[in-house]
Image (cartoon, rainbow, N blue to C red; front, side):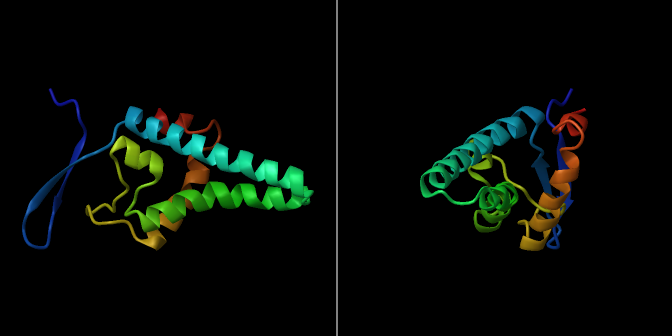
Length: 126
């Protein structure tokens, strides 16, 4: 009985790669770490807004940029890893096992919004 989900990829050189897919617990751990970091950034932004008396509209613009841009920027510059993914030992790759591209990361993170509906990853987890 195999406990880990794997996928196989044939490379152009004719080498068969076996990739182990991240499980629900590993993905959740990465999301918790990333969520704590994003929460800290948001708390810092709230403190700055409070002290600088900046309009709340700026903060409302910052929140979507933070939650969308965080994943996008880290996946692009760290080869498919955010700090949470790095701490969990996982990374995002394309279906062929290659590194994620910027365009693929944009599409992936736009679809993340749909994946969170209606109950915050509950549907995806099931």
